[in-house]
Structures are given as C-alpha cells and as structure tokens.
Image (cartoon, rainbow, N blue to C red; front, side):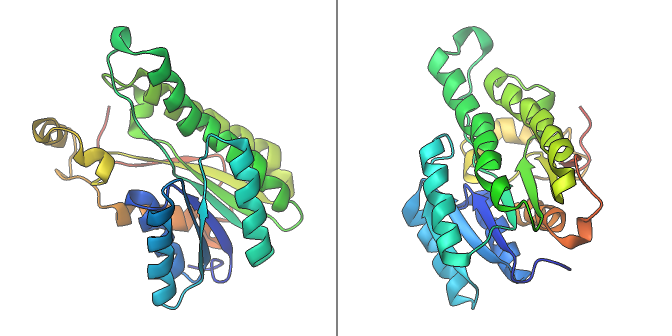
Length: 245
C-alpha cells in the first residue's frame, strides 16, 4: 500500500488476535511497528517474529487504561524511532453479564479499557503527529448496535464511534485522519471462549456463513492507516461478512 513504508505505527493489544494480525500486516507493508500490550512476553514474541522476518518492531508494555503508561510508552517509541505516524487502538476486553447482573466493576473495567483507553491513546499520540500528519484507526465492533449481555461493551464500542468522529473533526486541520472499523465475529482468543453452540448460532445471521480471520480485519486497518485512504476520515467500516442487524 502506498504510504506505509517506513512509517512508525503503534498497535495496542498486539500480543495476539486481531492486534497481532495488524502488526504483521503493517510489517508486510514496510512499516516499523510498535507492538504494545500489557502482556509483555506476548508482545515481545510478536515483535521478535517481525524482526526475524526482516522488519523493525519494538515491544512496549502498555495498559491502555493508564495515562502514565501511555506517557511512558510514547516516550519509548519516540526514543527508538523519533516519530509516530499511526495508531491502531485495538486493545479490548469483555466482562459479559445481563444488565441486572452486571456489577460496577464489570461496567467500569470494560469502559476503562475499550473507551477511555482509546481516548488516552489519542491524547498521548496526536501531539506527536501535529506538524507532519498521521492516521488513527480505532477498533469498534458490531456490538455497538447492542448485544445481549454486553451493555458495558456495547456502550463502549458505540461511544468509540462518537470519539472517532470528534477526533477526525478536531484534527483534520492538522492533517490527521481518524477512522474506525467494526468487526463482526472474528476467530480470536476472545471469541474462542464463547460456547460453540452460541458461535454456531451467529452464523445464521452472517451471509458469508463463517467468522472472519484476524488477517481479514488487519487488511482494512492497514488500508485506513495508509496514504491510499488519504481522503477518508471520520468513517466507520463494518467488517462483518454482510450481516445486517
């Protein structure tokens, strides 16, 4: 893709699943990749794989819900590469319970990681993009329309759409684009924890009749981070096999 070679891109939640797939795809496109995750051994493993393939990668510890860790991670990236050109806010978690059974802790931790963590990431990275531009892609979800047992996750992923559009509006003048992708069911460790009968039930609502591979989410993310998407900002791309709520 045009405009990713030698760019420096941070990917959160990159130790496994969609985040690891994004990191690998960015490497294939010639970017230097920052593999950020609170799972440091996992991040180091992905970074090592990229390095063995001839790429440039840096593993950094990052709990996205911590402003202090964002500050430290950003400083490490600038020390290593001297700039930040892109950010993929992928880190996320679920704590599923029906509304009346959900605890304050279940609500708060999901909002902290899935929504506040993206807000903190944008605050940490955007000042280092002003002056030369950049691109941000936030990982929303088809659950943003609402999902049984996911009032916390659905609220966070819906809020992320509003956050993305606001960042796009405020920083277009700085040459910074912000978009979101909204994956449907994707074969990741998070989804693999769902009972098989539930996963099979999802397929009836997916015209392609299968879950996505993480690489199929990574490709559109890489596109939106690239110069090929230079006139796309403030948008949400559903990657869902054609499912219609």
